[in-house]
Every structure is written in C-alpha cells, then in structure tokens.
Image 1: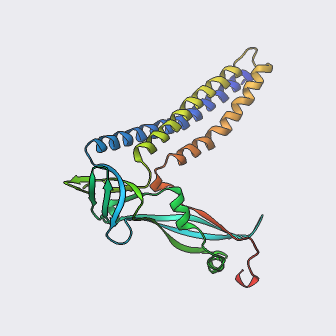
Image 2: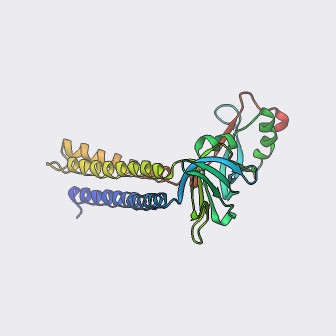
Image 3: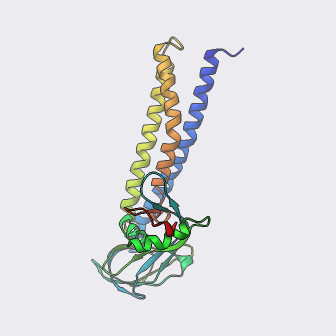
Length: 276
C-alpha cells in the first residue's frame, strides 16, 4: 500500500528529474556559449575578428538579414493591431571596407549560404516597424484573412555602422571559411557571449540552490508537519516555475541571428470598416 511518505518521495523524485533535465539543457548551452567565446577570442588574437566602422559598401548596404513574416489581425482588447511572426530567414554579406584602429580592412562579399548577420534590436525594430497609417491599412486587408499578410523584412547594416567581422584572413581582407560563414555583427560577439554565459551561470546556480532549499524544507520532520507542508507547496511552485524560466533563458541566449524580429503594428483609431 502506498503511504503518504512514499507518495511524497515519489513526487520529490519527479521534481528532481524535471529540474535535472531543465538544468542539463542550460549546462549544455553554457558549454556551447563558452566554446563560441573561446573561438572568437582566438580569432581576435589572429586578426580574424576585427572591429571597425563601415567605410565602403559594394552594394549600398554592407550586409542584410532577410526575415519572412506573416501578419495577422488582432481586434480584441484595445486598438486594432497586426501581430507579425517570423518565418524562414537568410543572410547576405555584400562586402566593402572597414576602418579599424589598425587601418583599413577589406571584407569580401559572401553568398547567402556562407553569410551570417547579427543585428541589434534597435535596427530590427526600425526595419520591421510601421511607417504610416496608410501602410497599416494596406496590410490590414490581407492580415484579416486566413493566410494573413506576408512580407519580407530587410534589416540592413549600412555605411557608418560600427560592426565586428569574423572571417578567414587573407592579407588585409576577410572572407568566409570553407566550413564556416562570414559573420557581420552589430554587437561585440565576445561581450555578447560573456553576458549570456553570466545569465546561464546565474540560472544554473540559482536553480540548483533553490531546488535544494525547497527539498530541504519539504523533508523537515515530522513528515507532513507545518514546515514540511510549506516545503511541499514550495516544491510545487518551483516545479511550475522552472520550465517557463528555462524556456525564457534558452530563448535569451540564442544568438542574435536566431532572435525573432517579430513586431506588432498598432494604430490609435479604429480601422475603417471598408478595410475589415
């Protein structure tokens, strides 16, 4: 016969198994971020990761991130809105030249398959935003239909932008490797890796310590006494919280190339009935 004590220990086992799985994913991400940071640091020492200002462009734009989006109309709880979600994306490095502290560096153009572009949030919002009510109205008709409003967002890296370029060095030029893409980033890759590593360490340490704490409280004798019952409630709260927290951390440490652009268009007045 199953006693309350046995059921309680079983529940603790489920709690620890779930926690171990979530923390194991975070540990795997931490190792991946650490390896990425180590690679960038080594490349910087070899002159294959350079920082500079875009001085010349070969196609008017230094690099682009293309993101396919689908927008759908939202009419509940507030003004009329269009919520865009991301679909397939691609990257292009058109090439040009950088002014660095050590002189000018040429950046070769790279095909889509050999390019990666990290953009910052501000530039992504600028590219994906709604410029006018007229643009909103034009998109609203399709967004109100089953298929939604489809479009392609182009997030551009332009002349005058400060960027970091990671590529194979050939004299005073950088280009793609045979097995790795040419990276153009609007954020410092090494600093980005360090910040995400700190977040993961905080999550791992905080998650493990809090799990141990709630377990210890749940095991305070007598079983199912006041403190033990409080500990059981804390264990349940931890169980319910760790999964969404783990998901949020996982999403936060995705590289900028994998961060969703998304966006929500909104207007301050109702959409005319002819557009609905």
